[in-house]
Image (cartoon, rainbow, N blue to C red; front, side, top):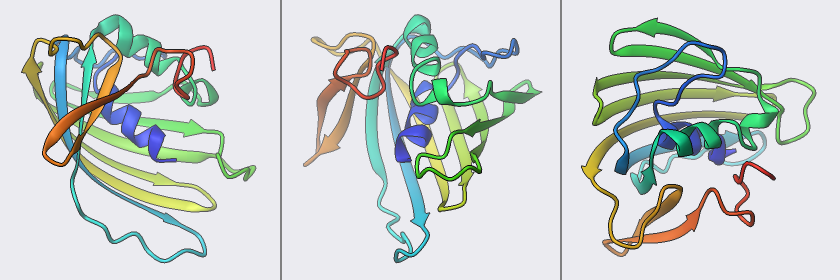
Length: 176
């Protein structure tokens, strides 16, 4: 369930599938700081407000591939409204917990430029509620050894590359 919010935050500004476009983010290395709370029915509340630091090397073609991949392939086309620097994106997806009711995520993107953006997101379903705040910034060219689709996370003060979302073994690979 976190993967939907995380990928939506990572992909930031992709061409929308429904014909409306969001501002395109600059190709290269993006670092995001996000605080997410996902509360599942019957479980203790998620009160962890520790920022999660993630990174992604991307370009427009990679962003588009991600938006058409699982889990996004199990979602309706995003409903995008807004203009200028502020956009709202609503996505309705198959509930990963098996409920016949969809999981709906409403995200507001505020683009400060092609190199900075803020995300505020709420997710609801029969079994899950969640919210997320994220700030993402372009850092420049991708580091040596990183290619579009590579993602990483901060571990012990060091950004560690852990996967490429375009590889067949990754759960977000467009073919899965």
